[in-house]
Image 1: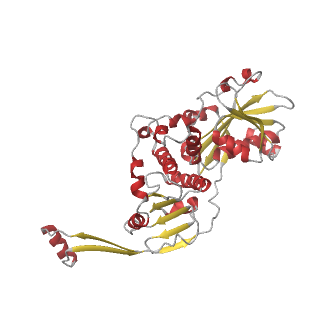
Image 2 (image 1 turned 120 degrees about the vertical axis):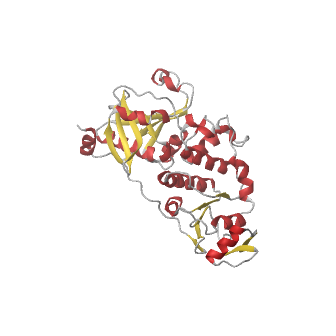
Image 3 (image 1 turned 45 degrees about the vertical axis):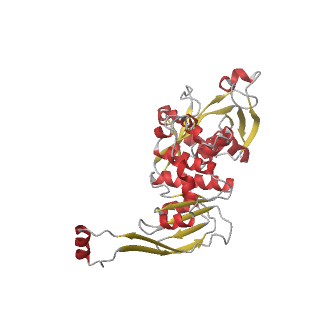
Length: 369
């Protein structure tokens, strides 16, 4: 397609001065033209990326190519000023689907779901906006986001892009990101890329996103203070909990605490608290830390068990070969009511780790035994 944008140049003394300084022609009309070819009908796709430096025309091209999408999405930029972000989702959407969608884009902090949009962090606003756009899109209609990730830290942008890509593909939707940031490509893993400055379109093959390598250490309970107010239940930590901290690129990102558990058979350890900081949610960091610590306990001869009510963690463990479901989602009842006092009013699921064990020597080193 050929795109032309023209505007009238109103003559003035300053306009005349600049024309004289830079030897610009005295034309009454200023025009810009772009020739763009994006053969999107050639094959099915879920994710697209229009990328290039400021001023190269990427937003203009997107407005012409997706002329219906951006105006349709415009009302979604408004959020209720004094109501929970949950109330901004389509009224017909069941709360279970809203919760799953929020978790899938990496916004997995139920306490924050109850707050208005205006009090959320920039990273949380970024995630919940993406979730709302996915929720409101009609089947087959593309979701187009200009200035994608421009308001967030680059680490948040990368993690958020990976979480979004998983959600879009799982829901079989179409999403187009428009950005000047080249770093999101490897994390978003788009099916096609249009580089506006070069007028170059390419189809891509799905690749592995960059690896996230965590450093796990045993830590003091004082580290819990950084994570406590992000936990979906409460901020308490049991006395005697053995705690672990995961870092990525020298930044703390996740915390896991485990306590003794009295059960049938051999001695056991129970997962007590596992929290990933909001900026790093959505790519499985919490699940990886949880499984790593469980493998440590197994290597030392313990059973590793966990009870959780978080829908994202339940889904992940049901799909994982490393965890075995011991109790389907249900309310605590009968004899277990005394053991699970906190779970008498909501669904919880019980799991046991059955994956590979860490070598005992590694476990003892990590625990400083």
